[in-house]
Amino acid sequence: MAKPSLLLTFIGVGVHAAFYGPTFHWGPSLSDDIDPSAREVIQRANRDPTLTRSVPLRPFERYWGFLAEDSVLRGAEWTWRINISSIEAPDADGDGNAIADPHVTSVTYDFSWPANGNISTALDGASGPLCLITLPDAVDLPVAATNGYAEDNGDSTSCEPILGRECVAALLAQVPRPRGTNCMFPTRTPWSSVPECRDSLGASLHFGQSFMDWQLGSNASDDRDGGPQWLSGQAFYSNVSGPLDGGDSRLYNFVANRVHMMMMSVELPAGVEGQTVGGPELLCMRVNATELPEVDTDRDGVAFTYETVLESKGAQIPLPGYYRSSCLWLALCSAVVIFLIV
Image (tube, rainbow, N blue to C red; front, side):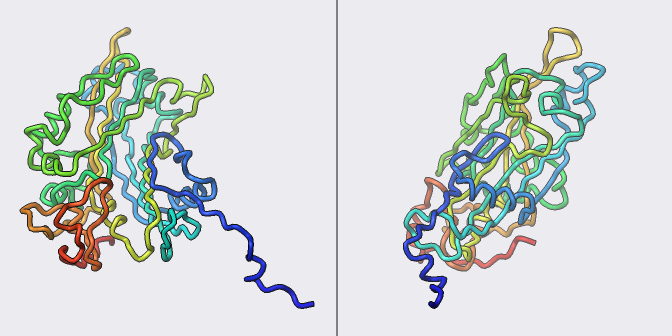
């Protein structure tokens, strides 16, 4: 008897479509929303990312003089790394849409530090929350601001070349030191409404903004009570897109070239018993720090990063919850072919 063909063996057999995204997650693991099979694919890709940048970080340096003599934080150099991957996802759930050669784009942030132990140990045993805010992919900046972070200063986490000294100082001044278990977030005024930031973050008002925070208390940084540990080199933030056509790399190019901005704040034990110091710190990075040309496709007078990294299909990068009215009709958006990933 002839053996059944391979095609026939799959007739009537359901093929499970795996959920990859869109989803984001704070913590030393991927979102629980991601299916186990997809989780393994993403984790494997993040170990060998398509694009990565690591920059040195001297965390909370302005408070080092107030720390104890045996402080492990004083003089420490951490590393902030961002990994960006374009991942083949043939089993991705397209939510009913037929997608040719489906891929997802993954972004992860991680810290590495020289001290032994978890992040609480690396912060001199701080027992309160480590507070974090990041700007999501939907928040874009004018190219004039984005280009402030280039290859010649791409070994720094400073936001001043992008936002200006006055803007950075104004943002930091809004956030008091954490108290007890309270991060003292959100800020009193949206960042885009701060007068000193009108030419950078203020330019993004037309699509709004979104902030996220995650508290890292003692249970989340130490497993004495059965909580998860946050160890050096572990990703603490992940953002995975929904499936896109493999030939459409606009979203990947955008997250590779945009400014990634994050504020962190902590209350540290001081050298004098019973006293604490600390407060906010603002970090910025571009993974691909190539200087971008200013391309104002909709001719509104401001060239944004997402406009510049358009590819040849004449459509803009989809930003969650925001589309410029002039580009709802794709034929009205001019096409620019730029290959920026090197």
